Image (cartoon, rainbow, N blue to C red; front, side, top):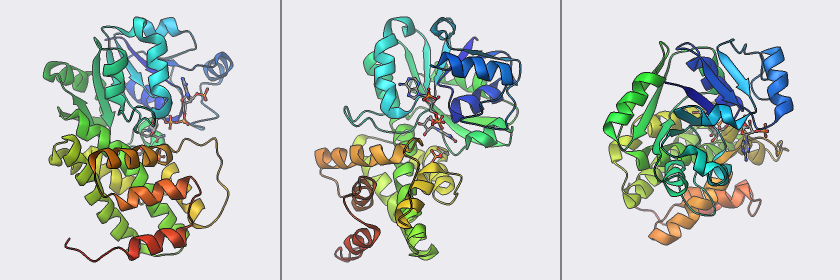
Length: 320
Ligand SMILES: NC(=O)C1=CN([C@@H]2O[C@H](COP(=O)(O)OP(=O)(O)OC[C@H]3O[C@@H](n4cnc5c(N)ncnc54)[C@H](OP(=O)(O)O)[C@@H]3O)[C@@H](O)[C@H]2O)C=CC1
Ligand SMILES: O=C(CO)COP(=O)(O)O
């Protein structure tokens, strides 16, 4: 199977390095200068420095190399995915499109596979998600992810083709659960970062993870996700990783808010936009998601950590 990875950020580069263990793979960067430099140095200095890119990764900025593949992994940030798919829909028809981004689009409130289905209806949409830092994948460290696809045969095919000796994929049919787990854990990770940055303590962080997980299950229930998916790699697994590691950008963004420090605005922090999307979804479905709501307000600078804490602690006492 000819595979291309669209998006040469940290994750796209890490995935391409990992998949090259199985054979040649194309890595597409939108910027030709970036592609030329990467091809020369065999390194993505800006997004994933110090990881050597093997020769089996063909680095290109020519979209023809993407359109020539049968399977395209989409490692483009979630808020940019819809426009990219819309622009290239006619060349993507009939392909297997595997979303590797985590988020819910602010304008449409769609997850990544729903975006594929909306823009390229005759493609086979799938989602690759779960606990994995790009650097770990690039280092061929053992990693387990969820491959979710509604079509059982295509899902099994993708599971076989995209697994490597160190990247172990578990198959799921629950695309909505996989989309939600990856998107929501980033929101809760921001809350955890705020908690630690503001000095609220590790016990408070454990409470945020647990009550955040309750919010993930609540929204999953409303949108038709299988509760088991949320307890798996794409939900609980990724929540555990992202809420406890300062290798996570979402967590670090929260740390910076909590400690009132600056944060590089060019960093990809999917949870900030997704918190706003989730808050809007909650309104549509009449759901109470207090942690997601304060993260939306914290991320857009409407409230400070003390106000967020007071908001959460002043809520009426209730059953767990
Ligand atoms: N990093 C990680 O450890 C992991 C990331 N992910 C997910 O992968 C997705 C991508 O993140 P990541 O690679 O880390 O982010 P990065 O910030 O490292 O890179 C983003 C990449 O997307 C490209 N890009 C941005 N906008 C567009 C666009 N409109 N069209 C085409 N390409 C575009 C950027 O290109 P340019 O450089 O030209 O701006 C860049 O190559 C996110 O959803 C993230 O949650 C999932 C698991 C792990
Ligand atoms: O999704 C990730 C790990 O599974 C990466 O998290 P960040 O985007 O917060 O760095």
